[in-house]
Length: 91
Image 1: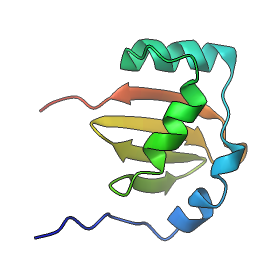
Image 2 (image 1 turned 180 degrees about the vertical axis):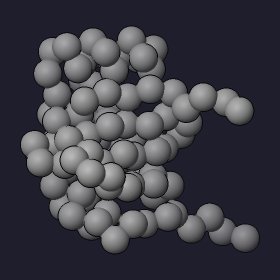
Image 3 (image 1 turned 90 degrees about the horizontal axis):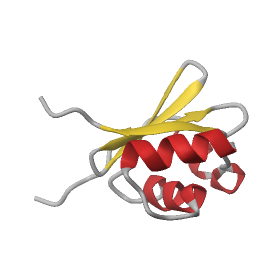
């Protein structure tokens, strides 16, 4: 059985605004530390992840939450600022 990505009703709005993704210097360091990344371009890394076919894009209140590859990326829905990202906890 082929995997079918879960798409929420607001996902098209989010995908249409990927060019707006950005973060702060503190956000860059927080994301890099939380995900143990070695890249200098955290925004491009996040953009690539949230663009994947298996990304689950959900909107809750003022934020977008994108779950992909065992991590969750939190993005402000108004400004498209990447707030944080962290690994999902194993249960």
